[in-house]
Length: 295
Image (cartoon, rainbow, N blue to C red; front, side, top):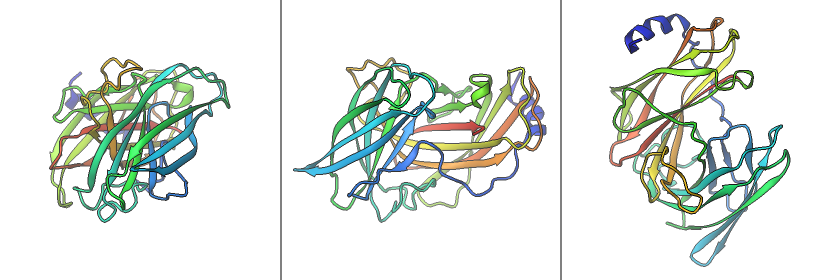
């Protein structure tokens, strides 16, 4: 079925207008004695959670350690990960914890890949310790650490837009993997934010389960803008735990839509979610869209 035809069907299943956005799981403040550090996570949204951060200056670097704790209810699978770092100018991006594009599109000072490895299977409550070192870049910089889990769950938009857009769908826990990507579109639109160009993102999901998605189910769509941290951009390359592969560092994350289903969605029916993403004009970046349905 072509995208235009799917849009006609999906238009009957629009989610409600956005309301006040809240921080989605996968973003946080490191909460250390050095207050200018934030973390973002991509993948394994409900399982491994970073806790007990330690970030201390050591010579020309920062020494970093933290725990990845299994806060799920089942033993986690062995998973490859990469930890990357982005430094930003606080005058243009004062609070990286806000889910909005920076006031100044040129706030990114630099990126780097810090470490890569494999988290072994962990029972609920068990933890794995990560150690790394990061550059200052600039003494007044704000810092963003990205924990990237290579779980193979991201997919390319089809037809393929430029630059690359990737999609991750988080289904309700009782419908894991049953809310499927059906079609997507990326359309250039105007923007009033200096230094950015904008794209209208449309994602159509199909309920392929035997269950009805009930009206009122929350829906959140976010866009992560990420810069290369020393590798290729594509997140679908095979990952060797001894090779960073394709590290990228999240620059900012913004909410494109937050709302809820306005009516029940039966098996075989579609959901259309859409919003406008901001992309810095002066650098080539990776665009990652995530749609989360349910709590």
